[in-house]
Image (cartoon, rainbow over all chains, first blue to last red; front, side, top):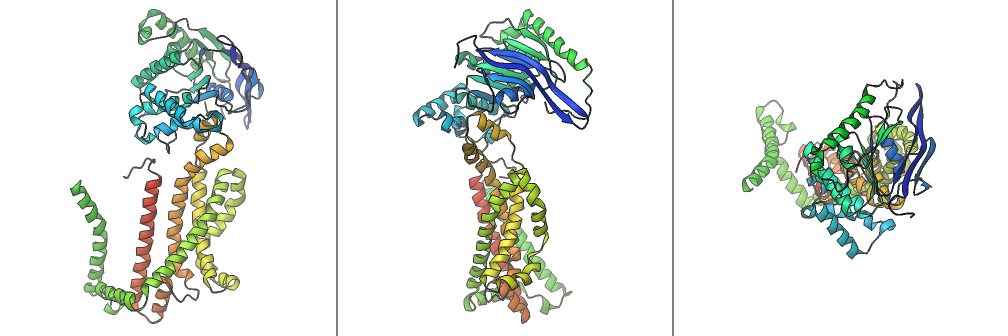
Length: 274
Length: 256
């Protein structure tokens, strides 16, 4: 529980990950180090299949590096925990629970149990915040993709994580919903400050949302460059129309595109799931 | 709404009407000896006769009770075992060949052995029906469980769920649909095995009724027995489907 704004929250310390395959040793992540400080919004961007989701999985506690350390609050990550909320690309909304019960799920667990009255209050709050109040008693089968993702975010928020990990959370949404969701998420973040790690392949999304962008190379993943995003929060839609935004987007875009044209490390027999 | 309701009723009744019409058609066509095909009204008359004077209801009850006991026991064992095999890879590698070996054996082929080991009483019939229920149920169960995606488990863990909580609040709800499917499948298979199980010196029961009737070439009784087996199975299946629909209201179904 150390520190206020600016304190180090998470750290990748010389992290590498490799597999032994029939075709030889396959390195997925190669000696990656960076820090994520309290209150930061880090976007990790790189070509698909480069291992950026793997990085998130390490910090979430689903996967261990073969060498190096992944630290959260100075302690090596050994498994998942409620202080690190995760938003998955496939939403992971529980289909057998109503919208309200999905949000309440975490609050009924021993790890973050709260009295029923408080639980109702928290549910009502996030239902309203995410525009789901009308659907409180509906099952997820009745929700659109965007609403499911809003529900997943509400559910993650309800247990008050200090850190949010998001794996291409808007990847499956149509362009308009996606833009809407980006703005909504920034608004929610402005109200309830969190530290965020966003995995994305969209340059536009990274520049619009993040305070720093970690650009990752094609396999094996190394850090190509860490780009500071100078725009102040709260950010609004108008930001996208400005020249500075366009310039930065173009610069980050070039960094990412370079990786698509660069020759891949020779490991044709095995491609890891991104 | 009303018109749709009427349409549904007509659609539900139409196939039965077709069967009866076909039945009459075969009889009237003259291709088959009349003695070999009792007329529907003859079978209906026999049905009422059996019901009133020969305790048909008790035969139905005796058979239904056997099937019920076989399915209950079979599923009670198939659910935990199917779950273990579906969930733990080593358990699957261990059990898969065994299960597929035994599943391939038709219960009828086991009757001589069952008589040797379990005699000719209710226990023997129960063993046959249990066998049929268990092996049909366990397959459905473990195929289903092995397809549960790890996503929901990961979600629960990131929200702070302990292993026990993950099991109770995520894995069990995800298993319920497979339990219900296993129940339905094994109910069907067990009914189909009923006649075979009642070959073992049964006095009462629909299978026994058919057996006894065949000795005396009472075709209309055989028809009654077969129709009763089908009807009871249909009723049980309908009840199970209602239960499923109620328990799985959250599921996204193409058919309403």
